Image (cartoon, rainbow, N blue to C red; front, side, top):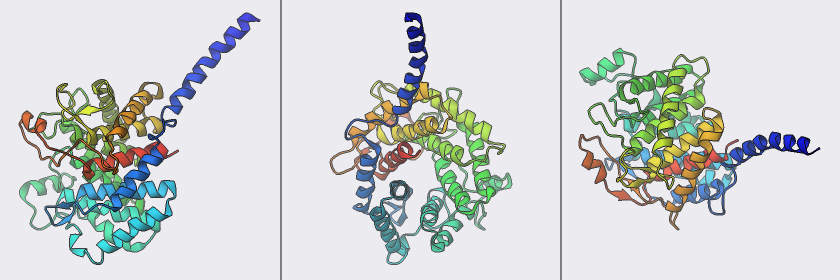
Length: 368
C-alpha cells in the first residue's frame, strides 16, 4: 500500500509542477495583475499630449502607445475606453489633419498600423482607406528615391531599408496589420523576407543584434524592437511560409541569450552585455513581451522560460509611478559608433517608448 502511494505521488509531482508553470503567467500579487496595470496605462494615454516626430507629425512612439491602448480595450471589452480612443482619433483626422504623417520614411509609414487596428475593431472602411496606403508606399519606390533605395527595391526589399534594428518593428507592424486587414499574403511575406535580411546582417552568434552594421553595440531597446518584431511575425506567419523556420531560429537564439543576460532583479540593461550599465525599462518590456508570447504560443519551453518572463514582469511594474508613467525610459536614440553615447543617453518618465511595450505585456498576459 505504501509503495502504491509513493508511486502515485511521484506521478502527481510532474502534473503539479506543470500546473505551477502555467500559473506563473496568470497568478500575480495585488497591484501586479495585467488587467489592473493595463487599465492604468491605457487610460493614462488619454491624458497625454501628442508626441510629434520632428515637431510635425504623430510619432511612432505615440502610434504604438495608441495601438496598445486599443488592443487592451478590445481584449478587456472596455467600451468606454474604446470610445474615448476613437474620439481622439476622430479629432486627429478632422481638426488635426496636419499631424497625419507623410509616407516617406520608415519611422512615419508605420503610422498606418494604427488606423488598420481601428479598422479591425470597428470595420469602418474609413480607417482601412487611411491605413493601407502607408503599407503600400513602403514598397512603392518614389521618383526621388536615391541609388541605394532603388537597389534595395530591386532586390525585393522595402526602399526604406537601412539596416537599423529599429526598422524590424516599424516595417513589420504596418505590413502585419495590412495582412490582418486584407488577408493578402504579400504583406506578411514581404515583411518576413525583410526580417530574414536583418537577421542575416545584424544578429550575432550570441543571439543579440548590433544597432547597425557599423555600430557594434547591443543596445537594449534596439534589440527590443527586433524581439517584438519577430514576435509579431511569428504570431501571424502561415506555417508554410518559407521564411518561418529561419525567423523562429533567430527568435529562439535571441531568447536564450536574453535569459542568460537577465539581471538578478529581473530587468535588462541599456547595453545588454555591460554589467555596469543602467537598467532600462522599454527594452526590458519588449523582451518580456517576446518571452510571454513565446511561452503562451508554445515557441518556448514553459519550464525554462515562464519563470524568466514572470521575473521580468514583477520587476517592471514598480517602475510605473502613481500617475501611470513608466520611469527609466531611454530617449529616442540614433545609431552612433560610440559606446559611451549609449551610457549617456538621457532617461525619461512617461515616454511613450516605454508606455507602449508595457501595454503589449498586459494583453500578452491576458490573452488566452
